[in-house]
Length: 336
Ligand code: AHM
Ligand code: MG
Image 1 (cartoon, helix red, strand yellow):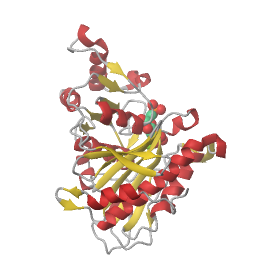
Image 2: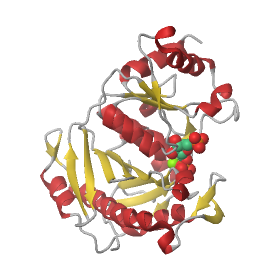
Image 3: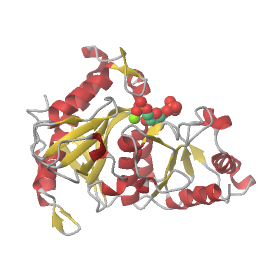
Image 4: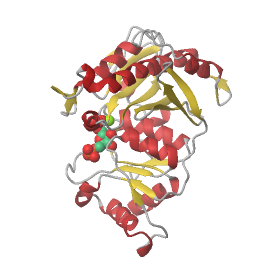
């Protein structure tokens, strides 16, 4: 199966018949979302084949962030470009794996940003990975495409989502009016609606963070996690559980599915970098989903969605999920 021959008829029908705040989804946005879904269907198949078709291991190259690329990082990036570039409604795309944006043939004004394969360190060990995407609208549709066209805050997103390649392949999607989820029926190649009006409960007893970085964290994050660890024997009225998958897409999928919070905060290893995760490809789309599901997302000082980007590959400190816990983290940051 390849992207050009896929046809997610059920997903297409969903897009054609759904309303966003009472209005039909613009045809150009439908076309782009369908192209993304079709490509992720193909990618899901490639990911599942892995070693059988020689797709595991390092590609021996580095990306713009100086990170080693896995073969599947490059394949996913190429598939997405190939899958969407014929979309007439698309003006350009930008990827975590490429230094510069790519202008496409289309005459439309949508901009697509993506992390083609999030959780790269999990590819070779058969643990869930995913694709994250964000869609913006070019402010001046007639001007030639420039990097600056992409530098819009998360509030400008018209759609965002991810596809997690796990035991099931599941897509979470928001168009700014709640969150829906679809699971890929691998026999028919169709994304099938499984949940609508996804909600994250405001209270939780579960947090996700890479604990090995504890000694590097800023004081408010250390305090928060220490209190979670102490549970009822400390400041909190409940005991906490911890999970860390090391694929943001899988960790956020758990948060959307059963609540919890996910953190990849700034730390002192690289004091001049604001964090590890990328604002445009990871933090903004995930924050849009989380806010639309009733959760919250912050860098400690500001809501992620309000941050004005100054660089396409900008990094950011991320704390997102159940609202009560995020508000607690915000209070701890405000006291410093
Ligand atoms: P990637 O986009 O190169 O895969 O990196 C991002 C990933 C996130 O998915 C995950 O939350 C984090 O890096 C894991 O980092 P660590 O290995 O430091 O725990
Ligand atoms: Mg990533």
